[in-house]
Length: 187
Image (cartoon, rainbow, N blue to C red; front, side):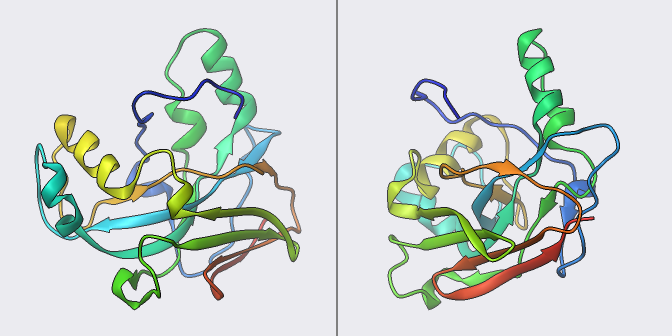
């Protein structure tokens, strides 16, 4: 994203109204002309925790999904230029499509999870959990210092390079390993 390497994770929240599942279509909101996808692994918190220590972090999640963090990039730029929070550019309704969750234990190597985002059947993003700046455990420890994690909370874990704009008529598909977990239309 053209920013310096972060010392700590950048955290923002999406309200529950951002959640979109079951392959429902994503409707581009009328307040943005530059909505961009960010394909991410998503972990689900399995039990409540606060100030979670590194040696216990892996016990706080056991399911993973694929998600898209849709961002109204034009709005985000304006907010950033003014030094304002950019929650509205990330947390608008239906801005977080999420696939069904699968057990992490079902994956061949839970420390080396490949994921892919495709737009109109063209690969636009490829990532691997082993290349993440902050691991799942790092994120859980950091976030839980400030926010109590509750069973059922979900954490989007960051996007690889290749973010881009969507337009009406596009089809977005996403994979963990070779399994298609996301498939929805942009309207």
